[in-house]
Length: 319
Picture 1 (cartoon, one colour):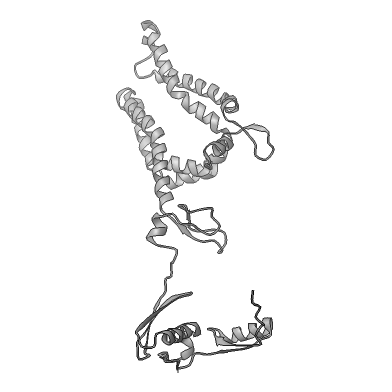
Picture 2 (cartoon, one colour):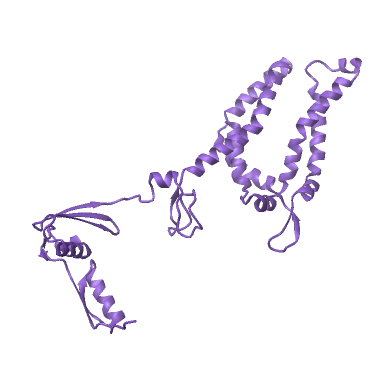
């Protein structure tokens, strides 16, 4: 290994020559001379009215390019804060362009491709348009937005379509006219409510209530369809004299209490179901806990956010 003695004098170029001279003198005790760009030097003629505006780094690159290729037309690209392109003809005449990209983080590749951002473990589709500080790097991949929209719409329709279709069939074909005249306008008014308002209520008011009782809600909702089928079977098994005592179209008056009772028992069974099927080891204490959110995270590797889920599902179902 060759050891080179530290220099006591430095002569060069810098865009901010005063700052370079001050830093060199204070930190390294060097006699620094960073001159401004002249009108002409090294076979290159500066075309700026104020020569210092060209930038010493660009001028030094042009002189070096002219030194290595004295008889050729040259194109010198400088990728700094702004990407600059300087064309230098064989007679030393400088032609200059500047490409200033005000939004370098936006491109077709960032919109639809995987990008390896600083601090990430690998390339990924990422969307983060803002943050609490200005130190973050904007991420504008549209793939998570498309995927989230399709996924949210699918799961919303999975619940909304059966309920909406069966409710429409019942109201139009089985419900008594005097009740239909009330139910139909109410449904039309509900359809006119803005999805933004429903999503706002779901995120701020409903999500904190649903989050700790998620399995109980799943049980209560899941029992409704089997309970309705079982209620229909029981109704058909009743003797004719008993069924005739109920006016046609009024059967729901005894169906609703039965469904409410089944939903209540299913709700009460939610903690037991969670303890039986969704028990995992707590990463902090190492003890087994019955937590569906933690079970989902450890099983699928995905995070669960009840607020975002409810906002998307209720908004999509309403639409």
